[in-house]
Each structure stands twice: as C-alpha cells, then as structure tokens.
Length: 343
Image 1 (cartoon, rainbow, N blue to C red):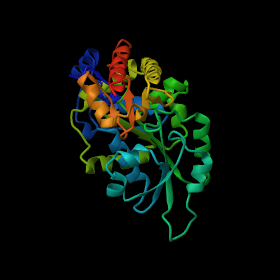
Image 2 (cartoon, rainbow, N blue to C red):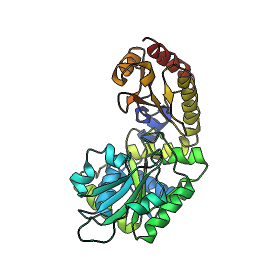
Image 3 (spheres, helix red, strand yellow):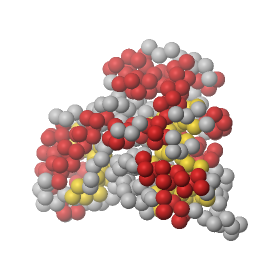
Image 4 (cartoon, helix red, strand yellow):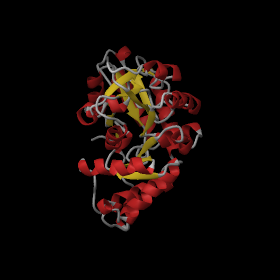
C-alpha cells in the first residue's frame, strides 16, 4: 500500500470541504453557457490572470492543444524549450491535431533567453516553416519546477512582439510560481497572449483547467472544445472545486515548497544521490551513485509505501502536495535511505 505518494501533485484527492462545495454547487448546461458555477469560475480566472475571457476545459493538455489549433495554421512553427510538456508529454498532439512543427531550444532548467528565442525565429522564406508562436512553461516541470523570472519573460516577450509572434504560457503550476517568487500571476500572464491554469495539481481539484485570453480567441477555442468533445453539461459540480481551490489552496502552496526543500536536503545527505536545485514543489534527483536503476529503485520504494516517478533510469522525480504533510517527509527519507544503502 502506498502511504506517501510523491508521484505527482495530481495525486491529491478533494478534501471534505471541497467535496461539500461541489455537492452544493448550482449547476446548469455548461455547453449552452448556462451553468452559473462554471461561468463564475471562468470570470474568476480571467480576472485573476488579467485576461478578457476564459474557458473551463477538462485538462491542461486540452488547453495546450486547443491553443495550438487557434494560434497556428498547419505547417507553422512553435518555438519552445526542448523539455516543454507540450513536446514531451502530450502524445504528439501538436503534430497529430494542429499539424505544427516545434523548434526547440536548449534552455537552462527549461528557461531560455531572449537571444535563444530570437535565434530560433525563421527568416521569411517559402522554403521554411513560418515562425508563429513562442511557448513558455511556468513553472517548468522537467527543468525541476523552475520559475521563469519576470525580467527574463519580459525579454522573450519583447523579441516575440518585435517579430510579430504570438505568445502562449502553459501555466500548469503558475500559482506555485506566484507563491515562490512573490510575483502575481497576472504579472506573468501580462507578458503572453494566452495562458491556462491547472486546477488538478497544487490546487488539488479532481479535474479541470482554465484557458484565458482575448474574447475572440476564446470564442474560437469554444469551437474546438466542441469538436474535441470537451463541452460538458452540469459541470458546475467540478467547477465548484476550482472556486474553492482559488479561495483556499493558493497560499498553502508555500508549505509544499517548504516540504520539497526539506525532502531535497535529506536526499542530498544519502550516499549515491545527487539532488538538483529546488525552487517550488518538484524535487529531481540522480541515483546513479547508488548503482540501482530507476525502475528497481522505485519498485523497492513502493514496497516500503513510498512512490516517485521516473524521468529515466537515473533521474527520478518527487512532488510534494496537499496530501503530503510535513510529518511524511522524515518517513519518506527513511525509505529512500533504506533502498539506496542496500547495495
């Protein structure tokens, strides 16, 4: 039995108060725009991110894919980091659905510079794909939960504006970035045309994400939402969880960050484990020095009631979240220590 699930912050379960809010939600037909709770969530997120309009969707992946479909025409190119979720973890959706190309750059911990973005922009030629969109991820997952500094983001934005490119932000953990940096989400969002907020990660909702941007953009997103089967009916039941999370689950992300740092500190003291810098709630660590392969390491951990996720055979990832109290960290570290020192 897994007692300490560090696989992802998506493993959170709705709390009793969140479930009560869901049970009491006023509902209507979301597909027809008549669910008052969904409408309230869209308005709340649009205001939170400083955008004209917003759209409730079943998942963050659908937010990214619909954004590609609306921003780009087939054959156009998206500039992003090579570690971006939109490239590595969405089943090739960009190619299969929007028929776009990705021009990936090698940023530092998932964060690239304005110079790198500018170098990636194609010269205008009928022989080359047209550069159309710059995409950033806040926080960057595979970069170790790294936070885009506002000034670096502004510099990339300036380059995109200069070349008349659109900008899209994968804001899966945008609220983690807000809490860690002290910069409001709307300040980050101001630098991009479109942005989405995931409700299922640190905000601990059972499902859903909200995509925000200009009114005409969101209107076109509605068409793709319908085409892709993302339109819903009495969705206020789950939108109510999002409203509850925005009221109660943002500031508490600081505890997840503190727990991640405590976990990282303890892991770094275990022989054979090398830990990457921790900025938010993601802890990446290399187990090469233990002589144990990733899958075997995780399997041994699971027998002790702890689970992490694998990046590859040497690089593992642990995420702290609402269901991981501070008291779980020493227990988890004991399991890591026991597994690492078996060889």
